[in-house]
Length: 127
Image 1 (cartoon, rainbow, N blue to C red):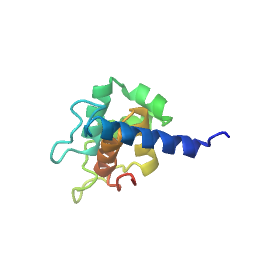
Image 2 (image 1 turned 30 degrees about the vertical axis):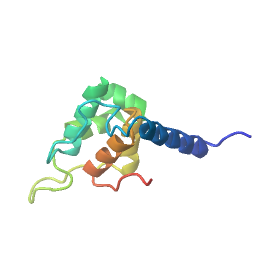
Image 3 (image 1 turned 180 degrees about the vertical axis):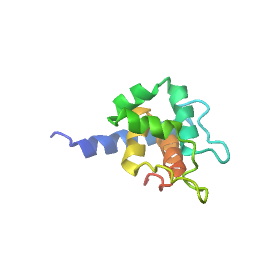
């Protein structure tokens, strides 16, 4: 019987969790130096994750199936999405779907994906 895309994704996540438990639960195995600094913005975290994986803005846009101008704005906009400054221009808030696409393109593990989602102001993945 053939698996649907959702079933394959569920199996991949389950395999990743089992692998982490077996390896001692290393919290940050995919990207070295991916722990967010205190007060780090979404853009700063995204840039650090990109550098850790060797992605350029154009390659990240291509792998995430997002418009290059949109990804460029997300990477270069240093406004704090979670603590906007009064009187300043509004920050461009990425959709949850876009954040997940970026994380998948960067091949982030569950913990790194959660960090990216939290930095964008969204709840972490359901486990």
